[in-house]
Amino acid sequence: MNDMRDLYEELILDHNRNPRNYPKKPTDCNCTAHGHNPLCGDEFIVNLTVEDGVIKDIGFEGAGCAISTASASLMTEAIIGMQVEKADELFSQVRHLLTDDDENGEQQHTDKDVLGKLSVLKGVKEYPMRVKCATLAWHTMHAALLGEKDSTTE
Amino acid sequence: MNSSPHMLERNFTVDPEQALDPKALRADFPALYQEVRGHPLVYLDNGATSQKPRAVIDSIRHYYERDNSNVHRGVHTLSERATLAYEGVRKKVRNFFNAASIREIVFVRGTTEAINLVAQSYGRPRFSAGDEILITEMEHHSNIVPWQLLCQQTGASLKVVPFNEAGELDLDAYHQLLGPKTRLVAVVHVSNSLGTVNPVAEMIAAAHQLEVPVLVDGAQAVAHRKVDVQALDCDFYTCSGHKLFAPTGIGVLYAKEALLADMEPYQGGGDMISRVSFEETLYNDLPYKFEAGTPNIAGVIGLGAALDYLEQLDMAAIGAHEDELLHYATTQLQALPGIRLIGTAAAKASILSFCIEGVHPHDISTILDGEGIAIRAGHHCTMPVMTHYGLSATARASFALYNNREDVDALVAGIGKVKEIFQS
Ligand SMILES: Cc1ncc(COP(=O)(O)O)c(C=O)c1O
Image: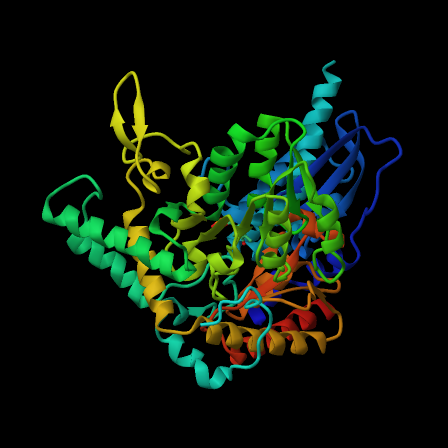
């Protein structure tokens, strides 16, 4: 019971009940991507407005479990107004928080100050099957930003 | 043992407490005796796979420690022992399903491979544009995708029998869809996401009036009810050993001999031939024509041990016990506010799918896991069923012979915890 509260902390439950920036597509949205976890059926669309390398606005649509919804909601709050590179760095930090490893399987240390509220996701680490839930919106955001990069090079 | 075509309907006539002692049977399943996250394991994910009795585990060890050798291809003692054991299981399978002959029993990897075999060996050389394959809206993906592949290969098209809100097939629609263009019917015996027991005997009889063969996907039926392929008169019947207390990687395709005799081989290789030259190859007799290569010998041995285990019980008593348990669980869950049962057919077996208002099934499953309770959350490889109900997933508890009321009580208490956490 108590360790379940470590996973389902009040902040997560709150963001699940009342997701921020949801459902939302900014009117001047210029990057969007669709993310899907075929294992559980979670599905999100992340919509961003990026100007001069800065995320001016962000929203998301779709549906998922409490972990994926809360993570998406917290993400939108965390990266709004952020530079695109900073958002990607933050994604790496979140990934380290959830898995201890970086993409190359090397142990990393997370920076509590950088993560802020996102630290609430740390409980997911104990549930490896749920890590994908917590990272779905982040991957989708990342894909949307890559799409944006592609479109600006044209 | 009851072998009428209606044997799958709910049957409360056997007193489960007298006929079966599920608490004593638990002792035969070592994996049930462990703690998960500090709680005794409550295993309610039998629809995904069942636990294995010690007799099955021991049979595999015995095989590898003593008899291990290849089958059908040596004359030394070990090979003889392995071959005798392997072929002995084929007889057990024949008896288990009341098939007419061992020539009708093909060992495969599981239900999925059995269905693919029928699609490719029966359907592919026969079907063409204008032909129709009739399936249902509640099929597992393994009884959808092989037919879609076949349609792409042959130009045949797929027709789908819908089901109603309770999760019962629309039989009027079935009779309408069944027509001169229908070349095959493929239907699930017991739905893995709804628990519905389909009236397959009736459906087979209707199809046979038009001389249309019927494949029955028995993956979720065989562990819960006596299946008599001759009484059903099905043309193909498929199942997976791992849902029947046997190991993974072994399953059975039953097919009527006349059909098998006329079918192309599924794969080419060793064991499935009688003579090979570069000009011409003669295929082996049935069923070996469909078993190319070294088979899953240990899996077959394990399957045999699982059938022996079930043989000394009574399938009717197992079914009655599980029906009683499902009834108990259904009543308990219905009494809880905010619970929606998915699949409320009149005839059901061993499966209870549900949703809790405002809580995603994955969160339900994680919180229950924290209580040591294993259920399944997801689309259960039946995405069209989820679409029917406008859901992306359900939570599913599924029972086996070793489950009892205490397991259900633990589930109900666990659901209480889920609500407590999500309502705070
Ligand atoms: C109704 C049904 N059909 C087919 C299958 C596929 O079985 P397997 O994965 O063992 O091939 C399953 C297993 O989940 C099932 O429940």
